[in-house]
Length: 218
Image (cartoon, rainbow, N blue to C red; front, side, top):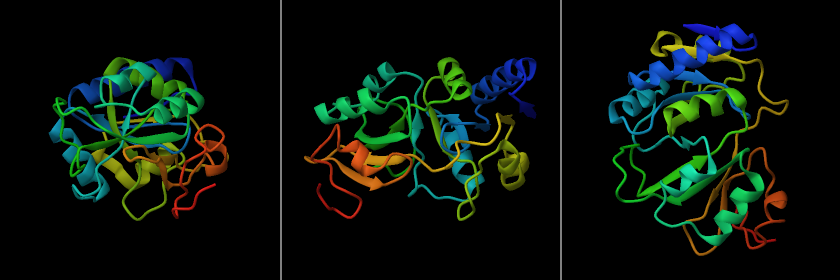
C-alpha cells in the first residue's frame, strides 16, 4: 500500500496503516529527516530478520533503532555517559545516531550487536507520529544493500517492491539527503564512526574530546 502523506487524509490513513503493519510484524517505509527508512518492530526477531532479508543483509549488519522521545532512550540503555546526554540535549531530534550499550534485560534480537545498539530520534513529523504509536523501531535505509539510499518512498518502492507492506511518501528528504552522523559513546572517549549530516566540528562544540572518523582529535 502506498500513501501520499502530503495530503491530510492520506497522511492519517497511511500512518494508521504503517502502525498496523508494524504490529503485525511486517515492513513499512517511513520518511525521516535524512533518508527514507525501512522499519519494523525492534522487539520482533522475525520482523528484524525480514528487514535484513529485504535489504539483502546478514546478521553482521544489525539495523539501528529509532525512538520517538528522549525518554525512550533511558529504557534501552545500560548506562548513558554524560557526554552522550550532552549530545542528545543538543542534537535530538535530528541527524545524530549514538551507539550505546543496551540494557541486558531487553528482549530483542537485532543481529550480531555485541551488546550495543545504534539509536536515533529523527526530526520528521510523520516518523515521530508513527513512533509514538509503535514504540522503538528497527530502521535501516530503504534500499537494497549496495544501492543508493532512497530519498523518496517511490524510489524505495522501486528497490524493495512487494517485500514492504506500507510505503509513506512525504516528498524528497532534506536537500543534502545525507545519512545521520554516527558517534560511538561506549568507550572512554566518544568517536565518530561515520560523518554524515552533522559535521564533526559541530559536534565538538558540545563534546570537545570527540575523536574523528579517522581517530583524529580536535
